[in-house]
Length: 461
Image 1: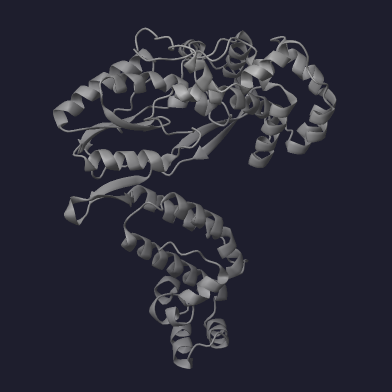
Image 2: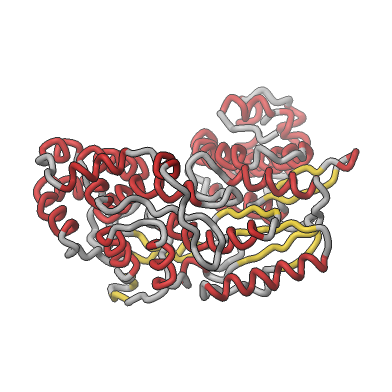
């Protein structure tokens, strides 16, 4: 792909101007005069540029950068069945023609491929996997649009934005509760990504960018449809999760609600479609809930009444965390019980079929998940929970080891080889069929914490 990009002829004419526009610092636009105020929101939303954004997205330098990102993310093939390498071959021979159709407004994205991902609660989340070519084009658009649009978003929005992450939203929530806002308006949107109204989204997008080519291409992506079971289903609602542009488009749509909350001085934190507003009383919370219902209704979005609530901020889950009060009335973070249950379920799944693998192989498979989980929940201030999870995990791995040995004679022989006392090896072997009960206490003196450390098992505590 990079070789193909180097061989592409340098675009001329309008594209040259576009590169200058794309490279311009968005702050300079704001410095040239006050941004225009949009009716109904009272918020300043500067339009991004005056055209040429599509050409800027399709420059060789931007496409090379986008390709590196798509290649690094890997991901599955779309409906065309072409992976990274096959798409690179396609681009070497057909990119110039594809680029011309893009600039002419004649490009038609392929449908996304439906993939159902199981959720911890037993339900499924629908993902729409674009082709690698469409992921490249969307990523190139994102590189141009995000620097222009992102500065107009609320400071209370933390999801899928440069330099921001879920931890920032959790820290903000903790600070609000520490300041005395002990009631939370916890809103859950019902199937948000499946119910995005295309016309409303495009309208909000036009307020920010003034480029018919980009608007038309994004509209084409929204209307591309989804393939399930070999049949293409037309879609008039939704922006399927799985494409590089989806998070930015979600933030564009939901920024209306952010601005309405800001205008009234409310303290809130939003990460994608998860939004928590913190207030001082239940009565105030009910008023905010009524406001949010009106705001989401204007966007033709639905609140999930079963999962939304006005309640105490303590005990409600937000991005996998929950808050608690320590000594001195300090508000701290903990891993939510549901997240702990999901952790154990995931560990069980990863270690379910371990009979034919060595313990080193089992640990190697667990290691990426454990490190990622530890990094995400590193803000949790509950050391006892970490120690209990470490103990539970080692207990499970010891039980797996006994199941691999199966027979009492094998357990006796292997334990002696590992340096166990004869009395310990004999007692463990005598209870060879009680793997879970047998994998505690006596076995801890042989399959020690240090033994797991040598295997490379990360510690959570």
